[in-house]
Image (cartoon, rainbow, N blue to C red; front, side):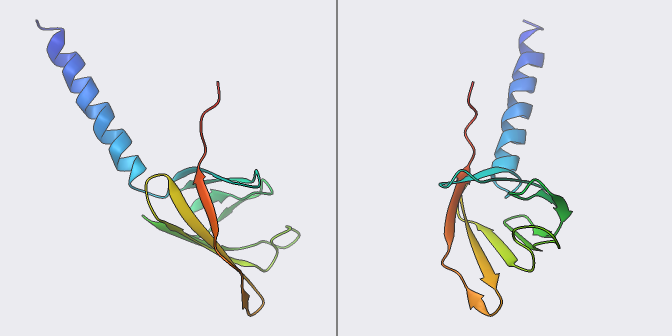
Length: 109
């Protein structure tokens, strides 16, 4: 019976950790076009693979594409819509582009 208590505690702890993470924009996101990005607090690995910092909050992220990057000078704003979906908007110059829908990347084994 004693082994049951630590296992139950571990299961509850794991469930709470996963629930907390799912309620934040942090993690891996994939676009329908096959692009990928990873958010970890104020750090982001953008689709080109560059790792930069941006403006982070629990359900959103903003950055400006760095010099030499395909997104150079573009303002990128992301907003989490649900646990599995976010919208990404690009501002190129003064032109706000249509929103893109990104989804959490699925683990492939």
